Amino acid sequence: MGKPRVVYWFRTDLRLHDSLALKAALDLDPAVLWPIFTWDPHYVYRVKGGVNRFQFLLDCQKDLSESIQKLNTKSKLFVLREAPQTLFPKLFKAWNVTHLVFERDTDAYAKERDKTVIALAEKAGVKVITRSGRTLWDSDEVVAKNGGKPTMSTTQLQSAGRKVGQIPRPIPAPTYLPDPGDMPVKFTQDKPATEPDLNAPHRGGNDETYANIAGPNGDFAIATLQELGFSAAEATTPHRGGETLALRRLEEIFSDEEYAATFQKPKTSPAAFEPQSTTLMSPFLHFGALSPRLFYWRAQDLVEKYGKKASTPPESLTGQLLFRDMYFAAQAAIGAPFIQTLNNAYCRFIPWHLPSKIEATDMGDIAVSGQYHVDSPQAEKWFLRWKAGVTGFPFVDALMRQLRAEGWIHHLGRHMVACFLTRGGCYVHWERGADVFEEWLIDHEPACNAGNWQWLSCTAFYSQYYRCYSPVAFGQKWDKKGEFIRRWVPELKNLDEKYIYEPWKASIGALDKAGVKIEGDGLGTKRDGVYPGPMFDFGERRNVCMTAMKRAYSIGLHGNDDKVKDGTWKEL
Ligand code: FAD
Image (tube, rainbow, N blue to C red; front, side, top):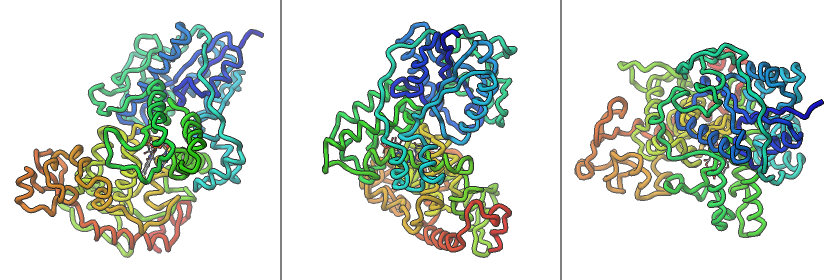
């Protein structure tokens, strides 16, 4: 038997450092090793990713490819354009592959996909090797040590984690990579490149309209934004990706030892910008350009150095990474229903407003039926104004505009806008807010996004629904002068700081002086110097929401209750 012929499949691990999976591949002492990435139509077509996130992903791929080339000029990241479920059986045969190696991914879709690929490999006589690396501990092992249950608190995570063992210390990047073997891909008829339709429904993995498997030039190049159906000019985020940048940023963060050792999340400002007050490592972690274990150990080593002066979980930097692992392990236990209410036994059922069409003539008060708010054109309009950043509450609008433009906002900013959309203002379903985040976040992580939306809407993880964020007082706490608002809501940039959080309270004289008019609902064509009035009385809405939450809690239904599934909850 000859030496192994190994395909190393990069997915959410776009790095060379601290990769136990890549080490396992190299430990095989391969004759050839192909580092590949497969464009999965599930991600290209189905996931609601905006251009900013795709740009970040391509940055990570380009950087990884260059790093691979530095280790072996004959190699690079070979990008193939076909769903793994249909591509691999052909590759295994045509490339005479003996081993497939990849880092485990516990996202619900990824687990299904990998199960299929593993079965196909076994059928083809290809040995599959996987290693953990996306989280501090392997999420499935955490679940097993947590009695098969989801981790619903960081305490549960830590106690299950301790049973799994110590978080592994990071390992260095490899210093060599073997040559790749031949790469014939003439096993299907190549199709001409066509513009992918990002709104097209999921094609079930056999995508015939996507470009040639080896790319438009047949050289397995990294795709361009254009190839993915975007124009490069559409990307608006200043945040760029790649392992090199991630490691450089990590060094910068930890060069300020005091900051890193004493980091306390609740004391970091959501209104800080250029620079932001937290690390902004989340998109790198999402695409695996940074190892969470490297980040963890850099922080933990400092904690040991600083002793009692160091901050502790859950507020410390290590605590932040524990939250991340907690959501991953919760998702690993619950599976696909984790990202929704329906069929999710751990998610409280709250009868949120349901989506409905806006009728221009029907903008009246919230429709109320019995104890419940039902389909509400008014709430739908609130949702649209929230998404567009024209609620008339400047702090909320500034955050939503930053999110849309840059793909990242501070954690407490996410708290503010998520609470406002759900239990602290609009009473709109958390899944609708999570959808918007999925579209715009460059760090969108299915487990963390759904889990945090559940937390903020008090449907899971957290239940203190009577603690609400005020769109006025919360922002003022951090940024009295409203600099953050002036940056993102330029209509108000000259407004006196007395009114910057509540422009509707300003006198005509103060508004005239600032060159601003309070008018309309902010939707439709923008007019210079015009900013909308608040879309509701916040105090009133907070009380309405709280009463509704109290009632929903007292009924106590969850996403898997029959009454929720068959709609008879309405009779309660
Ligand atoms: P830091 O404060 O510097 O923390 C370091 C790292 O810890 C982060 O990079 C992140 O990986 C992790 N982390 C910190 N807080 C959390 C948390 N609450 N949950 C999970 N991980 C955490 N984070 C995502 O990575 N992807 C998401 O899709 C996402 N959606 C969110 C949606 C809502 C409604 C809310 C309230 C939070 C969401 N978060 C999400 C969590 C958190 O806001 C971001 O991880 C954090 O703001 C990223 O900025 P940072 O890297 O500067 O964080």
